Image 1 (tube, rainbow, N blue to C red):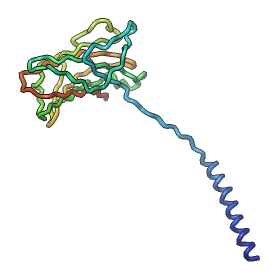
Image 2 (tube, rainbow, N blue to C red; image 1 turned 90 degrees about the horizontal axis):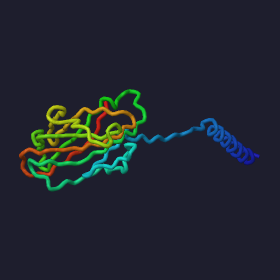
Image 3 (tube, rainbow, N blue to C red; image 1 turned 60 degrees about the vertical axis):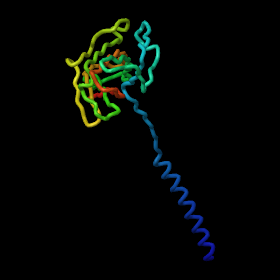
Image 4 (cartoon, rainbow, N blue to C red; image 1 turned 180 degrees about the vertical axis):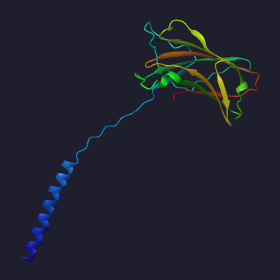
Length: 192
């Protein structure tokens, strides 16, 4: 009889444990949501003007780079295009109104200077002016700030955006009388 109680007790314990396991699982049902948050602004670069259709929409999406420009000498101008596509459809806190367009400049010698660039001209096409270039929107040294750190310089310009904005910039960087070097410009848009 002692053996019977042991087997019955184990069976009863197993049944009770199963009931509680099912109840706990039932009582603790959960729902899960995964949210992927993307950047509110997409940037692309090209050495050719980006096509825009009659509705001022881009006809292509540009690669974020890198873009190689060769044949540029000291005292010469590098010309390239930047596509800005604001993905945000709303801006309840108006962070797009106070955007900073940043060129982070480095060179292969690790000693860039704000004096390496003698002139920057930035013209724009957007939904209001998609058939003609407007500008210069930014022209140095009037509308551009430059701050250098140990290994890079940040060239900064204040630019305002609105939700769903589509803009294309024509960027002309004129180099000063500098020694031959390889320069990299990494573009970001900083939102407050």
